[in-house]
Image (tube, rainbow, N blue to C red; front, top):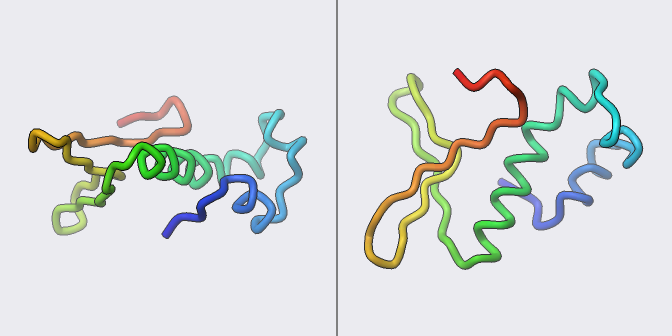
Length: 84
């Protein structure tokens, strides 16, 4: 479940807007959630239906969208350099 506003999500976590401009432990703990929420909003605003996919807990894709001609687009959201 995603909020329709990333700023509201930040406030819900009690995170100061100044923290977003620094690299610290608090930001490192939530930046993945903020990034996924942002991507979800962007996809929905562009009229994509978004889906989540996983295979028996072994693999997952954050978002799967389908184009008007039936092609599936997997989207994996990463907020750090570790992209294994």
